[in-house]
Amino acid sequence: DCCEEQGALQTSGEKLAGTADMIGYNRYYGWYMPQPLDARKQLGEKMDHLHAKHPALPISISEYGAGGALSQHSDNVRSGFVNFIGRPQPEEFESFVHEQSWPAIRERKYIFASWVWNMFDFVSDMRREGDAIDLNTKGLVSFDRKVKKDAFHYYKAQWNPEPMLHIAGTRHADRPYPVIEVKAYSTAPSAALTVNGAAIGPVPCTDRICVWRDVALRPGANVIGVTATD
Image 1 (cartoon, one colour):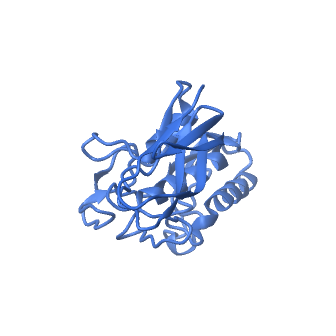
Image 2 (image 1 turned 60 degrees about the vertical axis):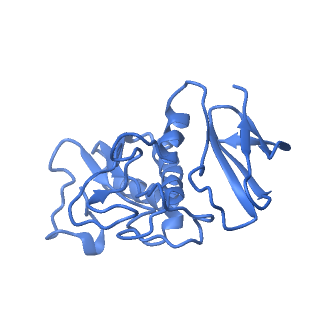
Image 3 (image 1 turned 90 degrees about the vertical axis):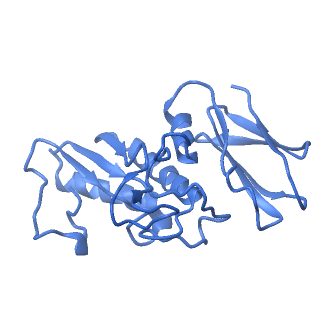
């Protein structure tokens, strides 16, 4: 179902809930919906509402996600411009949407399954989105299967028990500001940062996300290192 209670997206008033023994809702909070920064709250509240409305119906989320371009980046996803049906579609914003969406799904035990849309960027004629033409950019991996986006590593940290550590934002190499935020995904309880060989210190990896704020850079090349023990 794409459109139950979705206002302008409704199709002829058709209601699919109850037609079959179970249902999957396609819901793109954080992407196609207003107030994208409230994605976690909006998704959780909507699913709770649909569950209360159809208490005997097994509910899943059959699509959720966001576009992400490997060559487009944002230093602050909460204030930078994103075009959900055009350009740009920063890779960092895709990660943000998944970081908001998955916890809302995980904590609701009545949701029997969920599907990230999509594993790979894929052909979608007439699109001019992100840094691509005729591609849907919502994949966790590039169209040629060669590059895993940061969002892929977010889910690896969440779902795979194998110890892992991934520095996010490494494709955003030419930074416009002298102070940045560094983020990593890890299964470890904490991780430590170095910048140009100098220790910045450890931070907790809360829900598998490790964040260092107000990290100073020097002009020219900088070397970022993150270590963790798990």
